[in-house]
Length: 424
Picture (tube, rainbow, N blue to C red):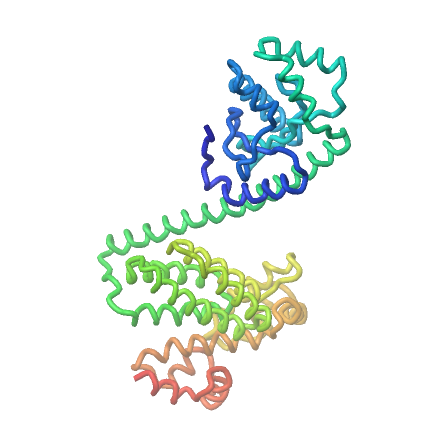
């Protein structure tokens, strides 16, 4: 009886397709076994050889075959490479280990062949190995029908199968990482919901708060602020989860919308437009067949990470800390009359060196980044009706209101006053 394998560890459909293709290409019998030697997959239900079927129908035949497979699987796992052996009945078989994260799940068994044409000595050995067989002459006749596979062809088949199995394993490790990430995400959502209940925070009754948070998230994307973007995204997903009550279609619409908005924010933040649009297209295809809310959330988190990486591509890792610290310093002190010299002195490096790093690593000047931060902060402050345009200008570090209006219009497309009036 076939024993099932946890589909979280190995995709049965993909396993069967891959092993079936190997069988069709080589003509060799193949089956997957667990660590106890029990078969859990025979692709396409291809039958074992007549010889093997006859051996297995004998008294203790199944048990002895299983014991042979179990020992072979153990040896293959121990050496982490194809292991050739002769089964208890005398056939040549090889086992290729299935190893995921250093743990053996079993092996792929291949062969049930001979390596040389059967002769007098082979039949003598065959009779000795199968002393309790019902009819040796019948077994002998069946042995003559077995395929003879040369040692070189057997080794080549084992090597090819090893590559196939490694491909399956690599693919599955990615799946396991996705499962782990999805579980962690579920825990984070549950934790945030519990925290909101503990603090007696009101439930999300409409989308106004959600959209406000979404705008804040997009602002962090444009600034390349990974930490705040990740935190806000997690809060957004919790809002979406509670608001939609897990309705798949609504979640899908919102996720597609969020991905599109994020892609545009990433381009505005400095990412390559062609690359971002290509990634967005691939993302839209990926989520077509998704049937779980958690998978949608996982996918949006991954694409956001990719977009953020595209905003500021740091080519030389030794400069990451310097550039990051410079950005953090600007974020904390944008309201002050900052200069390139101020930032450089804070980092104890020369102004010219810091300016070169920004141009090479971030593809923008320090003043460009400072201006971007100030405008983004101004947009947030303008949502508070008690602040005038002049006060907003001063609060974000512009001492000249006329210059502030000019810069704001360049980035946002309208003057500060027009933008402020549109909010109320």
